[in-house]
Length: 402
Image (cartoon, rainbow, N blue to C red; front, side):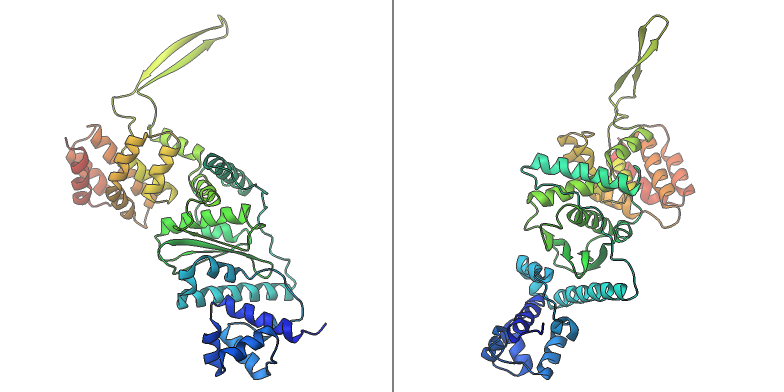
């Protein structure tokens, strides 16, 4: 069935909205009146081949996608994004970048089919209902992350490269400069599959969290939406909070955090009772372990070490420890007040043997805090690991030299 003039007009209107241009913008580009363009889009005026070519170029679309006879009733995801976030529609560079990404994804899908590749297989849709309250949003996110980590065989350790992990599941994963209040975007459409775009201007640790956050939308929301945007404007929405809960557990699994705290001997009570059961007498004998006073208290360098291990921000690690009941609200407040020191700790991570140096830094500070080593030995130890002893000692004295 040939494409009718009315259907062509509608398709041109959709293409214009997809790049967030007004009728006046396009009319001026073509040298037409706005009324003439309105008639074209309404199907009341024919459009010649030259005008179609110029419109396709202006809309960053191929001629075939505009003239293709098959009708697709799905809403264009970029139209939905521009409707949700006006600041994106008003940013020419970002708008152009999103259109470019969308076209690349569509063309890649087309070429994949042309060379006989199987359609991209997306991760399972877990079919989760929308949460009704904050507690349910939190629980859904935690359970979803546990199931997905198990499906991917990630164990309890850190995810080396979140974007790569997401991409291996058939999801496009890219970044672009966005307004500061926007952390990420998800697009869902039959022509592209699923795509995640995160804010390139944010720090690496924040981008990792955003990739995981948006991946939650892919797993739980793609059947209900053609697009989603995560920003300060909708941060309190329950599905956004579910995605945040997912990202916390996906990047910092509760069992992994507990194992890491146990490995560095932190987070336990000051007194622990252990039992020896004797099957001969069927009696138990209690043995009490007393930890050194204050030794189990979680300090800012513990938070920084955990953040460094899981490659997340200091704040994300601090909130996660509170979330898991490892620090009280009062302790969380104190830890967050030391975020600048925690961030410096993480920023000092080196490319060569980063985890070794991170561990040495933590170990030296903890030993100095417990008065197990002197300042001189502290300096010698960190210098041995290739760290700057002056910087390290200055920081440790500021916090623990009392």
